[in-house]
Amino acid sequence: MDDSRFEANNVNPIDRIDRIEAYVKANVGCSEDEVADALGLHLFDVLEGLHELERLGRLRSEPL
Image (cartoon, rainbow, N blue to C red; front, side, top):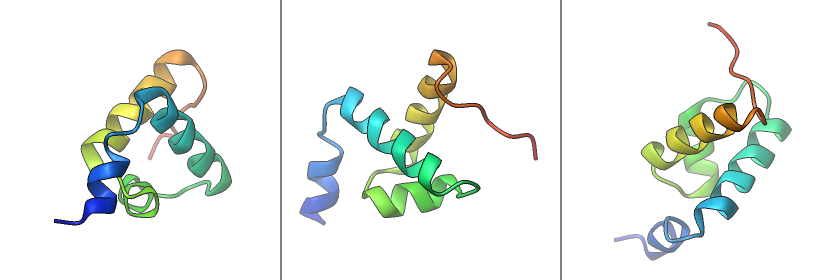
């Protein structure tokens, strides 16, 4: 098991959301998979964070 990935997923959810927001804003157009790989998070955690950012009005998804 990759311990760094395990540790990254035990980060405070607020910190995780802030990290996701910063990465997405710095890498406009990146995929959810790219965010997960870059931040060492599980895809589900990234999707959850993106939805929370949209709910809070801090991020807006682009239509395909």
